[in-house]
Length: 491
Image (cartoon, rainbow, N blue to C red; front, side, top):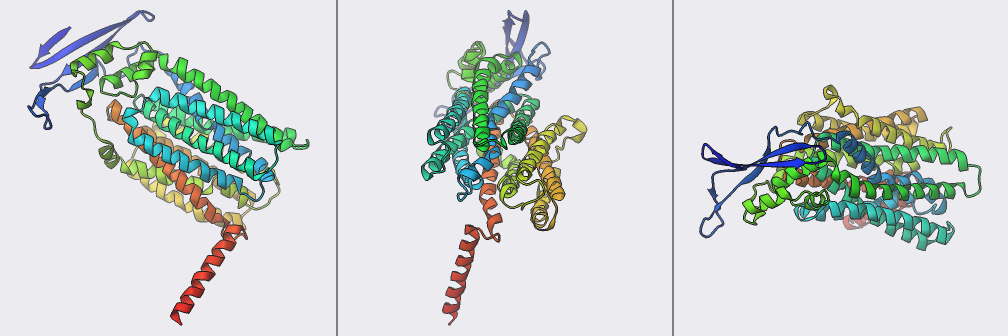
């Protein structure tokens, strides 16, 4: 039905939902035409945007609780494989004692994650979100299963060949991480902020689950022959099964929830092309066809901010995420495994520290759901992010002079601040933008997040200087070399 009011034409679209027996109303607004500067004959174009009757989620749409739960499970699946590796680091230290597994695997993982994310963020508008996320979870599934087969084939022997094989599969983890994190956060950014919070809480929950299982396997297999190996294989098996569950939930359940279909349809009417496969899978094509006709087959003329403009407007948010996760990964997990010394807890000590961090990280990601505790001030976020760097000298002096109780307290604060600040930034940043812009901004923020993790993984090696390691000896030799060269040059 087409109407005109004040020189503006409205096209009302009513879609009947046979399952819910309700109508859904959408108003397509065709503004007065304007001239496009790049057109040779200055042809008139229509600027189309979709406006719901309330611009909010319709009350008849259901499935928000189910969507939150699935987002939480998908968040677990996006990190459970990597967290399983960090939780079985003691097994890899036992098999490869001279190769610094925790630090090396992190440094292998992060370049592939960051490089893949940079490519995907640049081309986010051309990448189909559904295919991207499903491919990511499938890569996690097969790479984790391959780690199990590699360990079984080598009987847990610590050869250089098996170590290189582990590194290759960890590199696949990095690519899968970039596919899923950017794809999911970009997709959820055009929905409600609670979905982002649930996904991020699921990521933290994966750490708690793996830490809890690691403590359990330590208690069960500690006195058994090859107990570490049995626990590691159990971890990888659970992760493999969980990735299969995520593939099923995302491909067949999540995309068909009414509230998810509503947000994706709204984004499509605002010009988003990344949600087309998800809408097709949900059986929605009418609105997309309508938009295409109104645009005369040229959807690129829909107004949206460029990635450069989005980054300029949200550079403080991007910097916040870069610094938050850069600091966290410069301490966790390498420092906790190699630089905290020996205490009364013995072999349990690093496991307790990792579990403490993961628990604090999980709890803090639910705090922003309480409105009075949610921090939305951009200046306030930046101040807290910079104050957090005081943890670096605190960890250094505690490891050198403090007791295990002080270290556990510091690790818990590291986890609490990491989760709280990260969720506050990612919930606040996408507000006020259209669907395509929210998806692009989500990808850009994840790029800076992974960039911070990449930098932190590199800075983590600096903790080895001064403790008699190979890196420490190399650093001393370099200093002595330049000192001698300078001395000779002066003479």
